[in-house]
Length: 315
DNA sequence: AAAATGTGCAACCGCGGATCG
DNA sequence: GCGATCCGCGGTTGCACATTT
Image (cartoon, rainbow, N blue to C red; front, side, top):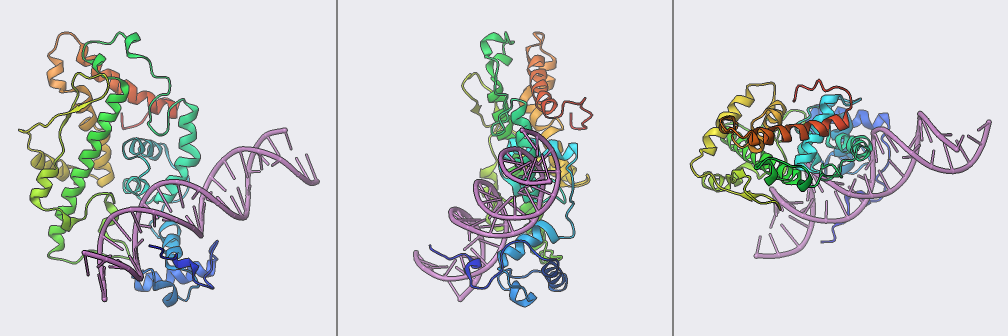
């Protein structure tokens, strides 16, 4: 393409912002909203490119930004979401209210990543580096089917699929309401900021497309090398997801719903444990171990990260 | 006390997707 | 349909400050 960066324009300032510049930007956005970032600097009397203004606003000046140290729960949320989403900082940031993607990214790179490495956990895969060979574990029948890798990857896939599913539904709901009212803008914020940015946009999701996109229910089958995906055709994903969504929306916010999704025993418990009701009835205890193994595995990750006794509400 | 090294974080850069004309 | 433009994201850099030698 060869499009030159907007900051290449002669005379545009780069580098740290001065308090005067901050004041100008703040005053302009408070009065007019940011509108087009491209044209904002000129209107606001700033010798900066629009990109620089947008960055300064989103990462620093926005009034709804919480600064300072991350608390334990935020740390755990970041680690968990990173395990699921990878380096999708903006998606992670949507579940940490008042934190910016840049701040989360910096915190991950400077603190959390190092801590995981120190504890012998691969910060990319979130797996312990010295994985015990299956053969030496003496695991029960069903537990032996799965390596930790497969368990974790499968949970990750399912949760990601569920997140995508829910996002689409939320987009759909948003789009339906949008047809009767304009998108809500306040100081340049849009409803979109609440949503994972990697999902499709509302108008792109037709009902049939959405139905098609309902992901396979992921089940573990007998493979030591990975997982096999199986459809569960009878399951009414649309209605159940809708129900889940309505339920989570009644809480304190989307992030709580999502945390519940990840940790509240729905997604992970179900995928890890198979069906708990079913396993409860089995006499071998193998599936109970199966559930416990996974729970312990996840516990161990967070205990590694924070060696103090866990008082996390998440587990 | 000074130099070297490490750390934290704001800001920049380049890319890709979306949108517009 | 296509190129130009805009926007947002993730990776990276650069600098100020802290800590160590």
